[in-house]
Image 1 (cartoon, rainbow, N blue to C red):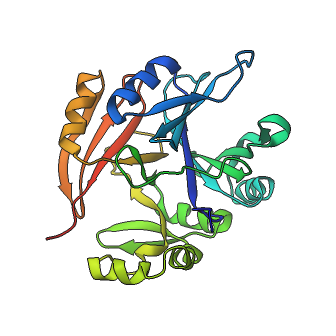
Image 2 (cartoon, rainbow, N blue to C red):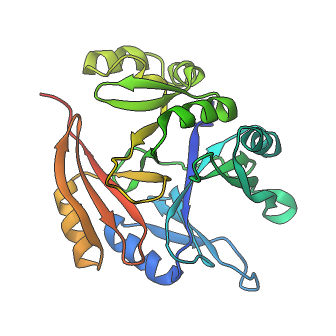
Image 3 (cartoon, rainbow, N blue to C red):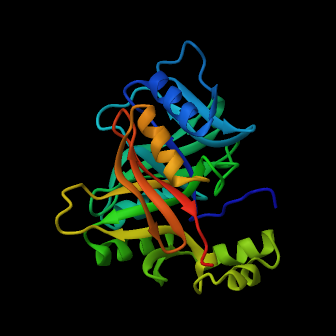
Length: 278
C-alpha cells in the first residue's frame, strides 16, 4: 500500500501568485522548501513542485491573479464523475476536467465552487500520487472549509464526496469512515495509539475541518490550509521578517498553538504547532 490517500481525502495543494519567483523565495525562507520546475521552458505557464528532503509537499505556479490563495485538491477516482456530482448538488464548474502532463500522465484535474462559492479542486491521480510529506514541519496539516452556512455545506459535501460532518472535541470536522479503515490497514494499531493519546472519537476518520465563520467576518467562504510547524512563535516571527503579515499572533487552542499569516502576495494560511495535553 504505497498510496497515502483514498478517494475523498485531500491530497494536494498549490498556489498561483502574481509573482511566482517571489513566492518561491518566501516559502523557501520560511519552510526550507526546495523547488523543481515541472514545465518546459516553452510552456505558457510555469509549475514547480516544492520538496522537503526530496519529498513533495505542495506546488507553486505562475499565471495567478489577485487575491492570491492556496488551492486544495481532493483525491477522486473519476474527476468527471465527481465534478458532475458537484454541479448536480448546486456547485459551479470553474475548470473542466483536464489531463495534465504528456498524454495526461501526471493526472486529471478539475475545479468547482461549492454552493456557497468556496473553490475546491478534484485530483484524479496518475503519476502524481499526492503530497509525499504531511503533518511534519513545513508540510500540510489540514484543509479547512470556512463557511457561513454549515447546514448547506453538510448536504453538499455528503453528496459530492460522501463526507459526514462530526463533532470532534470543541470543533467540527469532515469524516470519511473508509479513511479510518484505510489508515488502520496502512499502520496497524493506529486507532489504539490515537485513543491512548486521548484523541476524540472518530478522529482517525477526519479528512478535513469545518469552521463556521462569525457574523462580523466579511471574508468570502473559502477553503484554507494549515501547515504543521515545530514552533508557531518562531514561524510567525520569521514570516514577518520575510515580509508577511501576522493576522493572528500565536494562540493556544486545544492540542495546538497556532498563528494566522498572510504571505507578501496575500495568500493566507495557518501555522499550527502540535501541543498535546500534558
